Amino acid sequence: MTKFKISPVLLIGLLIAVFFGISLLFRIYLPYNSIFVGDNIKYTSNDAYYYMRLVDNVSIHFPQLTQFDPYFIFPGGNAVTSLPFFHWIIAVLAWIVGGGHPTQHIIDVIGVYLPAIMGALTVIPVFFIGKALFNRWAGVLAAGLVAIFPGEFISRSMLGAADDPVAETLFTTIALAFLIYAIKTASQNQLTFSHILKRDWKIILKPLICSLFAGIFLGIYLITWQGALLFIFIIALYLVIQFIINHINHKSNDYLCIVSVITFLLALIILLIKPYSSDTSIAMIVTIFIPLALYGISKFFSSKSLRTFYYPLTIIGIGVIAAVIVYLAAPGLFSSLLDKVKFVFFPVGTTAATTTEMTPVLIPGGDVFTTVTGWGNFSTSFFFAPWWLIPAFAGAAICGYLFYSKDKGKSATPYFVFLILVTVMLLILTIQQLRTNEAFNYESVLFIPGVMFISLSILFYLFIKRGKDQPWYIATGWVIAILILFSLLILCTTFVDYRWFTLLPLAILIYILFKQRDGD
Image (cartoon, rainbow, N blue to C red):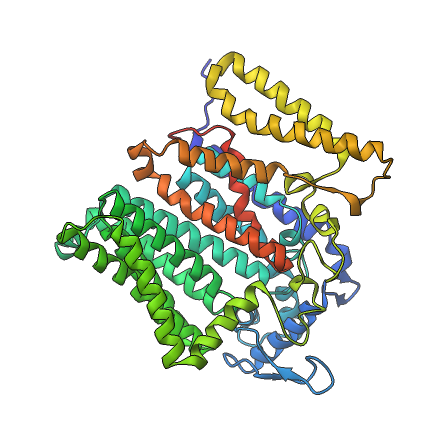
């Protein structure tokens, strides 16, 4: 009797399809009766009605989006600050389904379903990010987690949530996935400018294709949300760090320059097709020259055999001088770009103080510290846990250490020492709280590290531990720095701006790092 075997590729494909289906189940089936009520369609928020009103407008005047909404901040109206791409997607799909003449019902139905489908589609790029950084089973685990990820991400990707944050999350994730693959393959192939001049397609094809797609989705993200420059800043910051590390380690920066210039250039071209802000366009033009300047300075220093530590000092000096020159020569432009960055972290304006998504997560009311928002979004997976879970958390950490130490010996120690130290400290806090006889309520949830925070610490540990393992770093190690940097910066912005909870699904990849495994 022959045994039936299923190939790993087919099994993974089936699992991803199942996760996609589960994601749709949560987003479409469960809230269906609340959205489709009789002959009417109800949206889930005020923002959804606002966006769909703009979709109605662009559907009639495609591709032009109105620049003024008389009902926005009524009475009097206000300028439309939304970018057009999310509205274009709904309008184009409605035009296709309606055979060139979409009815209002078709537009509304597509507007209702699109956020849920986009949210479910996020499992695919998340899988590929996990696969690129670690292995395919890590990608499967990450995809399964993002399918059921709680909080703002699922609430803004539900049926009827016709708002652009879900598009921001999807396009960011796809762009990051292609960028990671581009950098990884270019580094592994040791891509140089000579390969391009010789048209060595065996070396340049994969990095080139991934860079092109990274640029396309980065450009789409730029025309989806006006705060997209934060993502550009994260990538640019990574490039600066990576260029410095490569220079210090005497590693070629050709691959990094090629990938980043192609990605940024294509994103700029897409942005210039429908420019919405001269400041953003100028910022993107400047960004293209960052990897070129970093590469040129590195080559010059290497040719002169100058000490490696001069390179980061020079980069910092040039950055400061450039900022001063822009400030003196174009103070208006400098102030405008600075305001855009400040708005991402500290929103201001007519509605900033009263819009929930623009308030700090730990001070949602603007004046009172509370952990209700954090607990409601993530419970024990993020930073918060009720006191009665701390003893169980401590016991699990100790039992886990004892169990793994029998099989793994000393190699298991670093993974659990941190857990044990933290839980001992938290037990002391628990005893103190019990002695004061404080009644438990969600507003008094202890501010302590949850699973995600502890996993992020383990990620740092693994990254530093394998610092001498050059083959691992060439293959994946330094690419993981993108994930570390992205997770940390999004985490920081979340504390001051509630809306960034929607981008945290990427950070769930750190759950898999209790044990780093090579290969597939």
